[in-house]
Length: 62
Image (cartoon, rainbow, N blue to C red):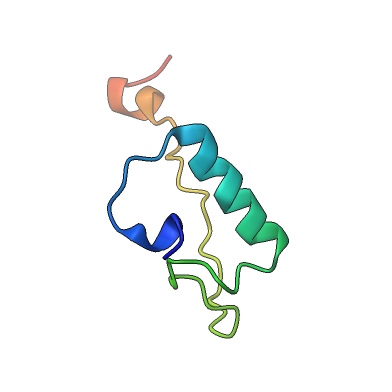
């Protein structure tokens, strides 16, 4: 059993980030979280959701 496989063990933040970076460099194929599948590509939604400022219209404007 390696350290990663030993279960819920306290790991400091720096070590966790270092492990994540190593997984990314190595292709991430051996990552614990299988949430990202390169095969299932989803279309990105537009993030432009800022409402226009309609204060002038509400207050009767100049």
